[in-house]
Image 1 (cartoon, rainbow, N blue to C red):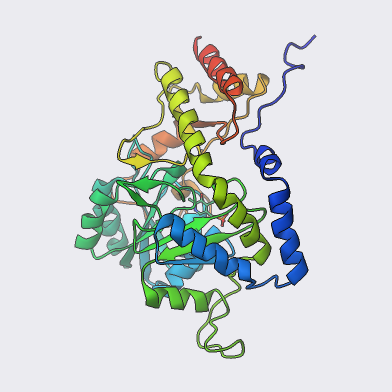
Image 2 (tube, rainbow, N blue to C red):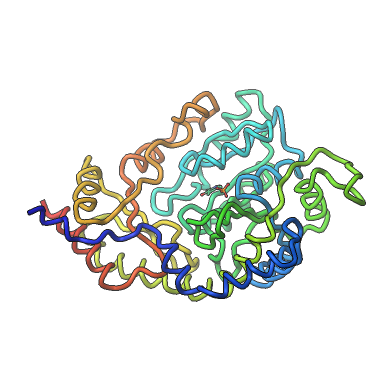
Length: 382
Ligand SMILES: *Cc1c(COP(=O)(O)O)cnc(C)c1O
């Protein structure tokens, strides 16, 4: 008999457990929307925006249709387009460079730091040089707070300022985290996030938000998400898009935001437990005393080509893993011809060959954590 046949699989991200916990609260919130039928721009959207601002401290929170739309909208608001370069890491999800390309600008890829997986402040200038050599105007720096950890803004900001780059924080994976007491949403002049179901704060479909303290940019983005609306619905003063957050998704998020702080604590506890139990067998992720991480992914590094063997061994034990990201953006068909920082991206290439993420969600109980830890240790013993 197959010894694995009886083993239950552990979910990689458990949206079902959270749904069970929230139960009738979500049902009621959705039913209220069904009753009032204001599916677009209903009262829940404004209510959520106020709750998000209270949570993160940004003056303006603007609900939008997805994390990708959030990025496109902020690039449109900053009038970044053809002929402009936006420096962004290659080691990120496809949506970061995709938004730049959708806005008509060119993503220029920069290097990340080996310990944090986030932008290496020392590599930004080499990307600006590559952008200029390609005849582009370097306009902005898109930081990505990868896997839930804020980038190093204390080091990045002076570099960006010296190079004349406007900082846009793609915090699709990091909403809820903070850096030296300041929450994501306030770490850059414009921040975006995603409420895709698998993100730390997810809705039940697609959704996202933009955060800023700038009144003018906030007005502009509110107009752009609604077909460039002026004073009323039939007044179109600029080219915009259908970029609004659905009322039903806002209603779901209002309920989910209430338990989010507890979930962040649970995620942090699990990550620290994983780190303590695995640090002697693999390279575990960076823990910081100055930042909190919301652990969108818990990502370890396995060198020497042992990654696939580890993934196979865990899979046989009913433990799913994922590789974020096995092919960095600058190697993807869609972005292969975009400029790369001078000197290349050696750290990015190495990380792409070594990273593997373990199950991580707020409802992962200790027996499941121990099963995962035991299986990783066992697989790497040989
Ligand atoms: C998920 C993600 C996005 C895009 O979010 P969507 O809501 O799926 O459009 C953008 N950037 C990063 C880094 C992401 O992880």
